[in-house]
Amino acid sequence: MNLNIDPQDSKPVFQQIVDQIHFAINTGNLKPGERLPSTRVLAVRYDIAANTVAKAFRQLEFRDVIEAKNRAGYFVKDASVIRYKARGVSADKSEVHKAIRNLDAGILPSAFCKISEDYLSGDPEKCCVIHSDGSGTKSIVAYLHYKETGDASIFEGIAQDSIVMNLDDLMCVGVNGRVVFSNTINRNALNCPGEVIDALINGSESFLATMRDCGVEIYSGGGETADVGDLTGTVVVDSCAVTAMRKKDLISNSITPNLAIVGLGSAGQSSYEKTQNSGIGSNGLTSARHELLCQRYGEKYPETFDSNLQSNLVYCGPYELNDSLPNSNLEVGEAILSPTRSYAPIIKELLKELRQEIKGLVHCSGGGQTKCLNFGSRIHFKKQNLMPVPPIFRAIQSCSKTSWHEMYKVFNMGHRMEVYVPQKYVDVVVSIARQFHVTAQQIGVTEEAKTNQVTLEDCEGNIQKYKL
Image (cartoon, rainbow, N blue to C red; front, side, top):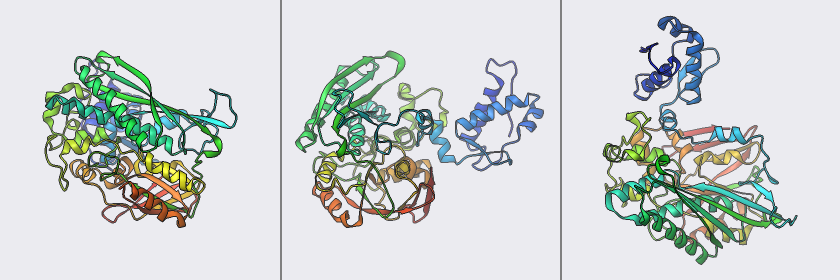
């Protein structure tokens, strides 16, 4: 490994080391598993302080591209993890969980969302649930489509993405009453004019109306549209949802051994969807758009990515938006922009039929098939009958060469909602899901373990293991 250290450069020496090693890893000059020279060796070789090298290594550790192994030194981490982290995103949000671990966990810490006392009415029998989320970088793909075609209606699906990422999390605590939403749209007005805002607002109202037609009582509580100038080159869409419910109706996610895990499929077309769903959801889109879409988009629309990213990580895929997605009747752009499916109508019926029997509901969003690790205690989640992997995920894996181990940690890979029930209720869950034309099947079981862990059989028959 050769470094070019310039003490006269305005960039600090430790930062020069960080940037050059990170670049060498991204370009493959340093391979996964390769051992880095020791801090002492590099200090002597380049006539710099050992503390400077150590500081650089700590920064690379923070970026999650190298790791220390006992006393053997520092080694390059798995390549697929590096590419994901190098774009400034995290599959498991470990830093966030670390930051909030000492905060009040609410009145039911095991629940999927934080549950608070009903501070609004003061009713001790009730609780409040507030949730915030958004469509993530999927809005940037919508922006690319808009710029290429002039069709602002594509943003209607982005509005749905933002709402669903809140609504389906709320459903996991057993919400059975009215939910009020507020949207926040941050835009660069030069690039996203009024017709974009119109599509986002009306798309929200249309989706809320569809859910109400399915018996899910959700309503708009207004929102905010902010022109934030160069804080964003395009548009960011977020939502906040609030509801009040009786404490006795909460789903505690008290996941125990000897339960069946039923997965609700993420692909296909449900009875309440207008078009076929690719299954993509709103997680991992930073990786998906850069790994699938070609360099032309970066050259033509530099406002859609961070200029600090390594050039080999920016729009490095083979596809145009209107190219056919392999093994699918969707175009690549259609598949990426497929609106996130809500399972709220199905969950509402499940709660009506089986509320007392449902031991857990897990929305497999951030963390993919490892999301369940955060729930229950000393549980082994065995997932060895997973649904077929939708073509969109196979395309991402093929283009990026991401390991299947990482793919199942980032993406839902075929089902995005899990229902935990005693074995005898599996057929009821499957039947209710199929009434809405959503595929469902038992994908696994829970067993007792020393610590929470996931074992799954991937699409190639290999066993993947995960722990907290």
